[in-house]
View 1: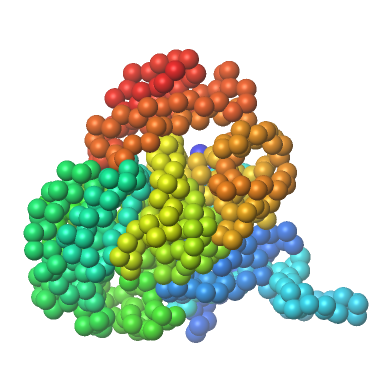
View 2: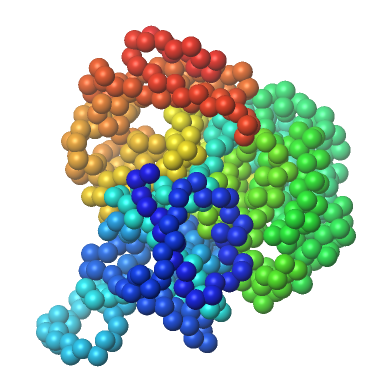
Length: 636
């Protein structure tokens, strides 16, 4: 373990906090007395409780969950409040997490399910006589200067937790940002391990489709030779979808036969839903005593902290799985202050004793945990609209109804700081360039997702881009065994498969529009652009697609593709693309060398690719050597 974890208890913590429902930590945590850390000031008032910590002039803070609008948070006020479609740097998020990591060897997780407020750099009045600034320094020449974050070397971090009279805080000390992020993920029970097919390409069908139209989409993927593993059905599969009935509608009169045909074609089937149970739902009446005191869209809000509610919901979903369903998209479990106010209020009460504010923070994670119970030992990689603290072990990827490319790239970079996975999904496109640039980002993210829920045709057909789309989707499949190995590292060590460059390279603290995919540097180009500046860490690098050698530093790149860079000395396993992943799929692997790789090795993970109870085998590969494997065939 490259980092150390410490727990400090201040005051009297609340009963309903994320650690109460999280998996056991997979790393040791040392408890220390609050009196041993006098540099942290703790107090309680009628507002709640407060922590105050010193910051240096150089302290930068990263994290706070899925943040789509900001990368560094020094000088920001971050309110960890669950909300759909956040459009500012306020901290509102589909997945706010009260965890941050610094560039100075320490990180902090605050174990709360409240709307905690982090003032990331404020100057306190200590009673000292301060030297006046020169008049010259007060002249501002632009609005950027006027509103720039200005904090001094004596500034502090202030954490306010409403209502609570105490809190447990986890401190992490480590050499690098990546080491501390990995330690937080292991505190969360380790990263998730998806099924191998879950990393393939995923297409969500139009919500208005019937079973014939779904079958036509499936046939289209296979006839056009577009790799696809998963098809998703949107709200129209329910007899009632807002709130949900969880009953097949008249659009799918022969849904069992449809599922059998799709399965025979190699597709896995994923169903959209949310947890608000309509009166027509078969589980509605049984859930009444285990639900909150407010309805949403006339549907019950189950209290998934109660085993009774979990068992009712999970047992019903087991029946859907028995028909051939392999996963569920869990929608609308975030907040709605910014999107019409449709969700339950913070003052709602749940039979467990939680209030609405607390349940907003725990809803998505507990919902994911419930669906995982329904799946049994079968693995999944699906979607959810809200996750919270200590959620790294849950195999669900976040998404948003927002659709700005820059926001989606920021989410891709930021999510890994907080034990989260993010899908910068493709929906519609303004033109061919827009489609290609968006899909390039999708292909190198944690989940390769095209969400056509409002499109009656594949979005590339009318843009004459099928060949380009096929190439990008096949590129995803070429890297699938490599990405699967990166997820194994996430599962066993906490190292995120997709993460910011600063996790591994301290000098990359300002780089907010590039990320690591495994250990490869990805620098997506925005729609409407033909090139961009790329920053590479110190050392020797090679362009994956152009084969050129690059030294660390800043480079300008012009390309129709996505800039992708491999560190010198890397032996990279590249697979021949397959149309989908079957239990008996064997990948043809070429070991591609970048620079001097005479002594280099690489790894691949072999297992059943399907279940939690599998045995993992780590294969170490060298050029010119063969290895016995049921999953991989190493080409000369």
